[in-house]
Length: 274
Image (cartoon, rainbow, N blue to C red; front, side):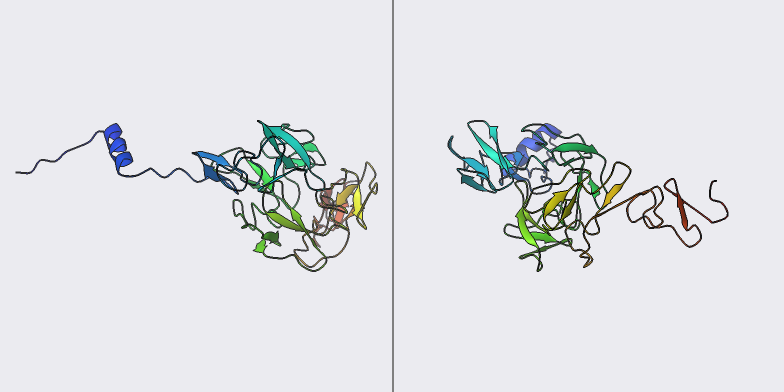
């Protein structure tokens, strides 16, 4: 005679644990599991480069290596007995100052949190953590799509992970994550050097931030430094309230049926206000 043994839910979990560990939920983006927690081994001083590899009090975790100094455009932030390196100009978790985190769907630009995703960015919602904005054409932790992370020593170039950047581009190391490609002579986020961001009314021209736009103008960037469409034109300023090719926003062109831009909206020739 055979008897069926029915386990309660807690007993079933204990039995499963006795046979083997229960797989933990995956971590978002470039984060990995260390001791049951999601960490970024590229900038975690307790798990620098690998789980359990801790930096001492004289070094900082910089791109997976314990280093005595941070790279160009980066600053050391304290964390426990050690610290880590990051760019205060673009790191959402340390925007403008160590520990100053931007809110959900805000982006750290030139050291300040800006509301909403900008043109060319995608809003990403991870399984763990707050939503964020990412340029999937150049972000090594969201390359081509949210959560798609490039491997070590790879860069995100035009939405695809690659071993090298295109001609005329510079390989930049991300904020504790994979690298990316930037055209430092025109890229407002990497002007002249990786991580050197221009101000909101400045344009990167020849690798130098210049105050090109007036308060009534908007700065438009043809390619964001990624050369995703082969464009080589530098950023430019325009009045989106009246520019037929950039009406209301950069690259929002009016159509033949509504060719006239007035106050940031496209109108037909016989229906324009005034």
